[in-house]
Length: 270
Ligand SMILES: [Zn+2]
Ligand SMILES: [Zn+2]
Image (cartoon, rainbow, N blue to C red; front, side, top):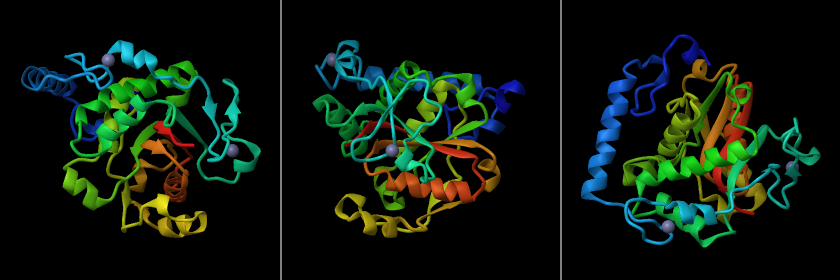
């Protein structure tokens, strides 16, 4: 990683771009103090068993079945891939722009998984859930042997952009916060202002496969292609459903010069 070579550790404690930001210690300290004070005045409770002092206790986290394998992009009966499989997708998905998907949990498996994601995405939002959720993703990456220097070399994390109106009403983008936390854990720089959404789209779930592609066509753009060009990009989102949003993002990123585009999500809906 370039940032590492130059002795600059990427800072994810604030919104300042990682590569140009030097004062990591001060920012990490203020981040830690803020979290400490928040915990005193607004203690958290485990979403599984209501134990005080954590959003997800170790016992409840242990009940989540973190996926032991990587699966292909296909949204119907995704193919399970062998741990050392070089190709991260099956034969029928070879034409897709997305090179592969890393997903930590199966959405349908557990009530707790749904609850965690729901509380993170919908009102009343629990922003701080980003931390345990990023940890779950990291756990999956470790299990599937994907958390390696070789994989993260020349890589950046990019959040899937959300509707501007949604971000305004919520005051933040949950994917950005998740990306930030994940970047911190795996030590990969996060880039927030390069991939943007340039027009409104309809909710994908209500549309047919054909209309989905049309709905997303040219919905995204790359603002600063220098940050993207030649990089291996890991697109971060909360749930992978049909994959069409990620595919459209991958298409946009690749035409802006990205070398490869993978997806990373907390859960997958099958
Ligand atoms: Zn618990
Ligand atoms: Zn496939």
